[in-house]
Structures are given as structure tokens and as C-alpha cells.
Image (cartoon, rainbow, N blue to C red; front, side):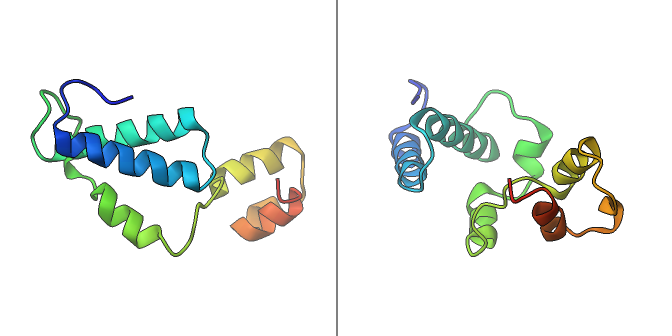
Length: 109
């Protein structure tokens, strides 16, 4: 949810991100959280917040990251997450499988 300490620019940024996420099918709660985190990270990167983590200031910017990943859509679970589920299900040959092979072996869930 927008915070009082945000500037008008950050409020607009929050609304824009939230609306875009909702149009892509995210729930309202999830959209609000992602938008707030994104705006807070941008505030930290631009020195607008009192405290900031190292990753907030040194990591690739949110806009650049989105631009790099925009053609791929959401990636879903990571290969490591898929591998761990395959391990729990005792799927043989999992160590040599690619991410897409793990997804197929797990039934695309």
C-alpha cells in the first residue's frame, strides 16, 4: 500500500506497477507487495530512504531487470526448486535433467 513518505512520483510508480501486475493476473495483495518492494528498492537506489541494503544499491535496477526479462515472461520455479521436488518424489535421472526436463518429469506443475 502506498506510504506517506513516498513522493508523488513514487506514488504514480507504485500505481503503475500494481495495475500492470493485476492486468497480468496477479492477485491484488501480491500486486501491492511487489509494487511496494519495487518502489522501495528504487528509493534506496536513488538515496531517498534512510537505510538501504547492499543489494538494493549495487544490484541491477528494477527497470533494467524487467527489460532484460520481458521477452521471457515469468520463469516459474527455479531449476533448484524443481530439482528438490524431483528429489522428494524420487525421480530417477534428475541430476542430469535440464530445467524443462525436470518440469516435464514433474508433470508441469
